[in-house]
Structure formats: C-alpha cells, structure tokens
Length: 208
Image 1 (cartoon, rainbow, N blue to C red):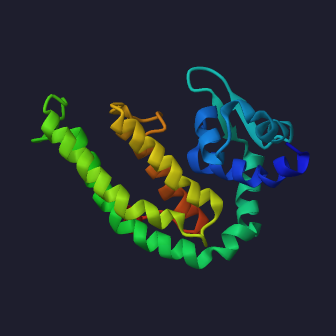
Image 2 (image 1 turned 30 degrees about the vertical axis):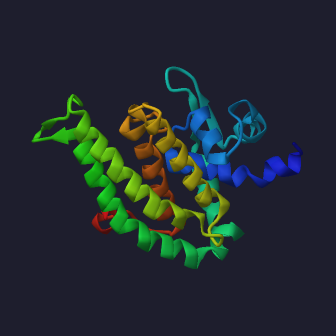
Image 3 (image 1 turned 180 degrees about the vertical axis):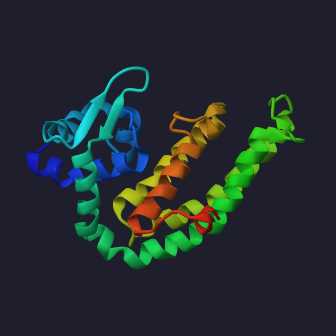
C-alpha cells in the first residue's frame, strides 16, 4: 500500500471514529472494508499527528483527540465525495427516517415481551422478529447501494448484510448486543453518519 493511498483514506478514518466514538480495530476495519491486521498504515500516521489516541484495555481502540475532532469536522466540509453526494444523501435521509421508526419497534419487540424483558424462551416470537427484520432489510438496504452515495455510505449495506448473516447463522447477539458490531450498532452508526454528513443537529424529528 502506498503512502498516497493511505493518505487518501485518512478522512474516512477520522470520520469513522467521529461517528462511532471509541472504535475497536474490528469495527474500524469493517468501516473501511479492510483486514483488521492491515489497519496500522491508516491509523499510525494519525496517532503520530496527534489526531487519534490509541486506548488499550477491555475495549481497545481509537478515539479522536481534540485536534482530531476539529480535523474530522473540517475535512468533512471539504470532502468532495460528500459534497457531490448532497442530493443523494438527502434522499437517503428521507428514506431512512420512517424505516428507523420501524427498526426501533423491532428492537423493542426483541428486548421486551408482554411488558417484561424478553427471556427468549419463545422461539416462535423471536423468529417472527427475525422474519420482520429480513423484510425491513430487503426493502431498505438496496437504497444504500445507490451509485451516487459516497463509498463509505454504500459500505453500510455490506456491513448490515454481514450482521444479518451472523443472525441467520444462530448468533442472536448480532442483532442488538451493544459493542458487538451488531445490526443495531451498525444501524446507529449509519444514523449518526447521515446526521453528521448532512450537517444536521439531532432532535426528535431524527428518531423516525
């Protein structure tokens, strides 16, 4: 990988960490669509420049420094892919909002049943939730593949595909478990990305 190729993706790294907050290596690799063991050429120079901070521990990963937050915000305003995609991003945001409400209700059905925490002993109930998730996914995710969208937005389609495949393989935590690169995690990242990329401020209207 050349230095130029790495430099060209520095905005994507900063933007991903801005969207996610503390970003594990696995999630950052997923954001970028690269192998986890190939992250160092992307993150190392940004750490050296004082824009990223590496954290270790149970949830090891990267966060933005104050200078990194400023750089991420400034780079977004000058990113040509984002600027050129303004109409497509607006269309996607309008399509996302009503589906976001549907997705939140699906998550509630997964987590709560008959007013009590779902103990997941009723397989038929859980399978019905998953079936409805498939329906939502099949209807919405193709919109994320619109050619006019920035590549970083289009990658959310592959990421959601991957989370759904994990659910289908029996990994139920891939639906809504926090800090698990779950479908819910990725969905929230997409929501935040659309708000940030559109220069919006989150309010009640954004919740769908």
